[in-house]
Length: 154
Image 1 (cartoon, rainbow, N blue to C red):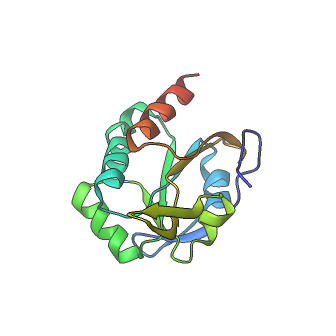
Image 2 (image 1 turned 90 degrees about the vertical axis):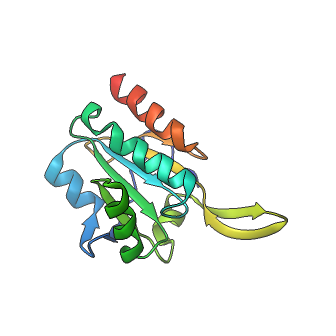
Image 3 (image 1 turned 180 degrees about the horizontal axis):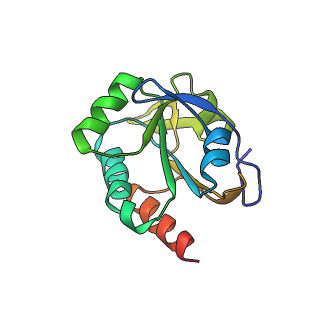
């Protein structure tokens, strides 16, 4: 079921691009700041690169907000993506798409008449108490940055 404003953000632990575990609840407890969690289909593809680099480019404008990207890619592929573009934020490997399923972003997709399961590009702004402030399903790569900046200003 789709998450909405006021819902508790589902907790998770996933490995980042360096093979280190990242746990949402631990990060919220330790940092006590806003978290942007964005789901993207595949590292180093045009849309995903636009989205990730856009978030990298506004780092100075979003204060202490923690940015976390999640895809089904393996940690080694995420490390190459981070190294290539100098993203500077956690990229998490959800290889079995279990976290994507809890956020309701693992969905049936269609391309060239073929249907398959994949990530619905989406982003979630989580407040310091772990509640969903905004849920953007089927967000465009460029709108992820715009939506984040507008929400943080409000």
